[in-house]
Amino acid sequence: MRASVTAVEAARAGRRWLTVPLTLMVALALVLGLVLLAAVAVLLHRYSGESTPHYAGDVSHFRYGSIGADRSSGLPYRVWKELPALFPEVFRPTLERGDGAYAAFGFLYERHADGTPYDLPIGISRRRVNGVELVWFNCAVCHAGTWRREGGERVIVDGMPSNNLDLHGFIRFLLAAANDDRLSPGPLLARLEASQGRFGLVERVLWRHVVLPRVRGELLLRHVRLDPLLAVQPPWAPGRVDTFNPYKLIQFSVPFSALDQAERIGTSDFPSIFLQRPREGMQLHWDGNNTSLHERNLSAAVGAGLDLRTATAADHAAIRRVARWLLDLRPPASPMRGAADAAAVARGREVYMRACASCHGHQDGERYVFEGGRLGRVEPIERIGTDRARLDSYTQEFLRQQRASLGFTRFTKTDGYANQPLDGLWLRGPYLHNGSVPTLADLLEPAEARPRAFLRGDDTLDEARGGFRSPPCTPGEPAPSGRFCFDTTRPGNGNAGHDYGTGLSRAEKDDLLAYLRTF
Image: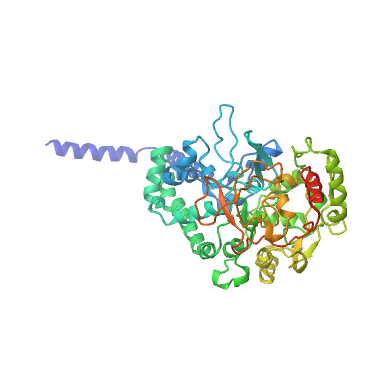
């Protein structure tokens, strides 16, 4: 009996629904539609478009501002933050010392007033793209370094070579991590939620099935493309990079097997980037293959991970802001200038002006003078005689690809290395384009008298010899923590050539060195 009553009541309820005014039903449908549209709009707003922090100061913009490389090469910020916990065997030493985690690879961190490191190291920018916070390299990752005096505090200098960064080690770590089960999307999502808070329902689905598989897929693709190259190259060492070969394999998808044997090792030191205005029109890069600051800057951004083939990839306004600031960025004065023997410096200047100034310009008190008949011009490899691997890594075929794919017009293939201005010389050791000579004093000796192997990675000044402290080492034996034994007998590491000044008398060399230490 009760079941029958229930059925009757249900039928009546249905009839009452049918008697609801049509206008009310339409209104309800509109409300539901608007709610649905609003929900879709919120999702579209959250998971589309992009934004990046703005930095009022030029220094902060240089250190942390995005140039667009995070769009095409970035890691999700959440993954970047989780990697140290996922791979404690790699990051534990720096974390135990209270350093920022990525100091394990020589990344530099500023510190808050309480001594704790900033969230991200210098040279790492942030950009939110389609709802995902991404981080990756900007200009400062390769062009901010440090120095200190014995027992003194470390000083960060913008524009000097990044003498701490072990980019080779960092890349090898990421490539190895791609094949590690700890980066599988399912387990990684669980770790992210456990340590950084739970995702919303939609966000969890996107991260599980889109974001994290894409992260791993991109890393695996880079592993396939880069690992054969890295396997045949000597480790780069802190402060060095192969500029163009990874560029060929990743941006242009050139298979490793297509690289000629002679072009496979192009490792060189990071350069300084002080005072760019006087350099406009000089032959830029180590081999002088471009005369345009603008094209040189864009090419460097591609090396940092920017994909210029995508019209919206580069943040051109951000790159122009950095470029304008660098035009007149002066290097800090050498701390060795004040204690120098004035008479020795004066005698050394005479030697320098006679033997070196036409190729390199000269220091005049507080000012660097960019004048010289051969300044910023390429010296043929047969004359300069330094290791030619970096020169040979930039090929005619790569030049053709740059022009066809990126629209560059000012690149060219040269036959040697460009004569560099020496502003900020005290911050630029080790010396020569490939960093194969540890100090200025060693550079004034014949090749056979230069150190065969020495430690890189120490930012303590060698105030007597010019450069950084670089004691001898034995290749194959363990190096001290944070140091790298640089073997000049390995391919691309040769320390011969640039024999200018090697025939001077001992007194002339001492005077010349006194002058050079003031640059």
